[in-house]
Length: 115
Image (cartoon, rainbow, N blue to C red; front, side, top):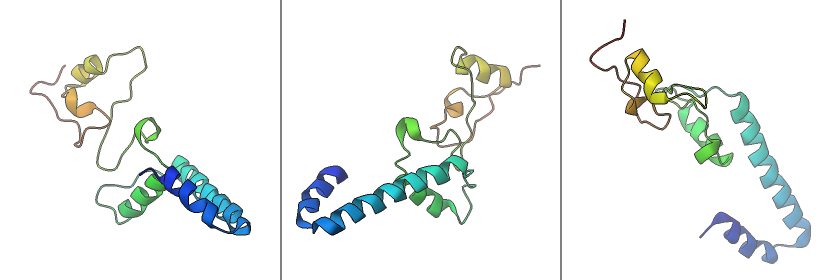
């Protein structure tokens, strides 16, 4: 069950004076979490703030296209739209698969480093 359909199911049973307040509070929390993520640099994967970062990220609904390019414990190669990530990874001597922003590991070096 989707959270919006659950919310729409529960909302009619709440008194009208509380329903508006609840919607306003939830909307404020989501907007505040999104604003916090805009300025919060993701912590290291070993940081004690990582669970809090993940909660704020989930509350801000930061997933898919909305995720930050920089994730805890991962590095990405940021390339222009017209550029090829494979070519840029090869220029740096990195494995192309490990340079993807959603890779679960830091970029790996290939056997040779271009000179």
